[in-house]
Length: 335
Image (cartoon, rainbow, N blue to C red):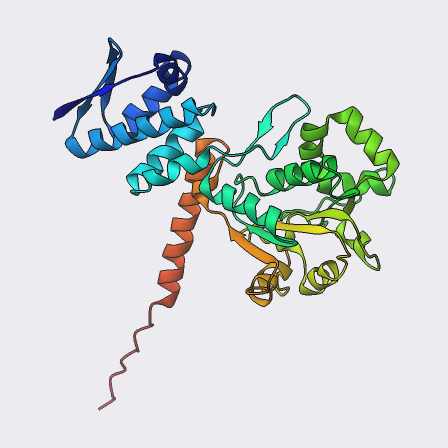
């Protein structure tokens, strides 16, 4: 057991880092098995030597982000701890970055992880971006934020959001209402992200003008989409024919983001995923980026990250079992 003393230049940064009722501090102490106390503009960290060193690096990283005006929450703290544990504390400064978009309530939308940062950069720099990753990594939300920002900056004239109408392992049957009412449940995640960015009133205004279109993928056939920001969500549920059809709709002045999670394919067993094929076919083509997000980029509840890691571990174990050679049977010769 050792004790390390850290000097603090600005106590207000420490207050931001530790959070309300020291909730962020509790995470640092629990995750790294250390004890942190603050006294007379100094922090004292006690525990095992290697754990104390990691805690010091994590607190320094969090304080540097707070000094740059970044809001520190539990997700930030856990991600910083992960970075320092992997020896990547030098990357912490890259997390303070430009705002992608401002929501209707004035909240800035930013990339919260290094994976998300690369994803946003890819969207800005390429005509087509494929964002592949598990639930909660911000694939759709950041794509919608980038679309709204491009629309506000008059870089595009329309935002088009689409996704295949495939049930997630259940049959919804015949839904009541007109055609729009029938497809709305499939498109709800896209509506939610747009409402957050624009507000319901502004969204409805742009929808009536035709500046925003939310439609199932089947509606894209036969169209050429110029000067548009197009997002294809849940692309793992496209067939290879649907994906090819969608990719050939792109017109001049348009930008495309395709998002999906290849571990959650809801297609029938005999149908290949158009997203998985596109990842192979489009790799290496100029102006097309393929970004892979992981469980480390999950920005939802901490349990979501743990659930994803548990499933990944389970799947790997099953794959290893399936690859084990079957021992040959030995038969005794009849005498």
